[in-house]
Image (cartoon, rainbow, N blue to C red):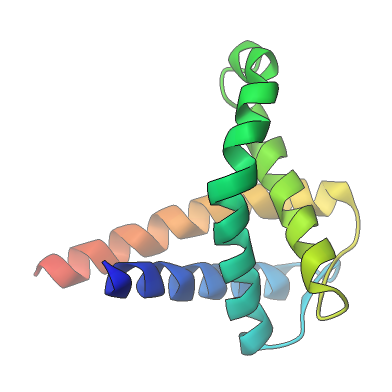
Length: 119
């Protein structure tokens, strides 16, 4: 269980670094900051995200679930606020686009690792 959680943090950090390489308006200071951001994001996804989902349930239903990307962008912005100057996202649009790309990257990375580990 602990190994799976650490692996998930590592994969999320790699995805964050990848997104930082794609956008000039998304900046991570280094790998340590990426690990810290992944950890804070995981905590926010456990505590804050369910509350946001419940509060915005009508919007999520009307948008057929696409509003969840907005919630992910909000959690990214909160993560940035918690970490400070080492993690900077310039604008909500960047956070929204980053949330979409992070979701896709996490899906691909987790699938790749799962397939590799089961062989």
